[in-house]
Image (cartoon, rainbow, N blue to C red; front, side):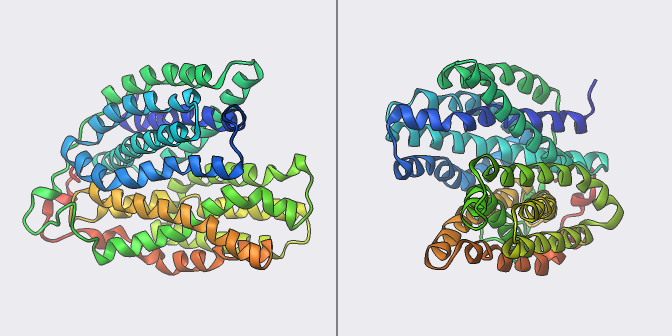
Length: 393
């Protein structure tokens, strides 16, 4: 029988597979709907819109029903929603389908992060960054599966539905085996409402993660264009930048828990923050593609553990339920992911691509300065003695 740690990692791996299988099919859906780049860009905004609209409500709801039940219910809704884009007949329906994916995905991912934190507290183990490493492997596996089904000629709608239907029973079976942990921080006198403004401690963690996810968004949207425009890379090479970045993110997450156990969260974040800054600086000044790919890899290692460490720090705050704090953190993280790419595009349009990509450096500097906010030892509230008991959030 799998341990709670292994079960949690398994669900982290399973969750993004169906969505990953959608990513290689986007060009086919674009052609089928007759969308230009601008029309597709607007339709793709449905996913972050759904996420942003749902997270403020998902936090209190997950805190009420518990992360285990949130994972089960959320996975069912998400598995249905993720197959809908293939059935869209116009840009409006595609936007709506992606909005439903973003909404259901935010719910199940919030449940997963809170569950991972609960398992850490109940068992005394450190699994958060490893769990996120399995998520990275899961989305890469889903992308490969999607590409394979495309090569076999299976239409996007049926391919994604097939993958989603295959993964759902496995995920539900694993989730049903998870131990249930109760969130009790809301019941204590003096604890904040889930709807109250974030505390200063939480804001510091949120600003830390903003620079991290801003960089992640920049790598996702601009790595190929940077290689093409700044370095003149050929078509077969431009996609390697993000591939190298994503691979090193996964590698960094698998090693992140060991680093955290040895050096602590703050020192681990500082080591990785310096790496991310070094990689970004190398990228801005690189004279050739080989060094650029090295820079993408170093950035991937540098940002890999940022969000998992921030989730643990936010969940350790005892001013309100862990689910509420993690929901706010996720909201700010997504804002960073969405705001970074347009800022880079605006600067690149009025200057050049190198200067545009240099916009990630101030964000990474901010994250490095705020690494001290990840010290969870300071997050224990004297007014909540149960916060120190294993299994209690």
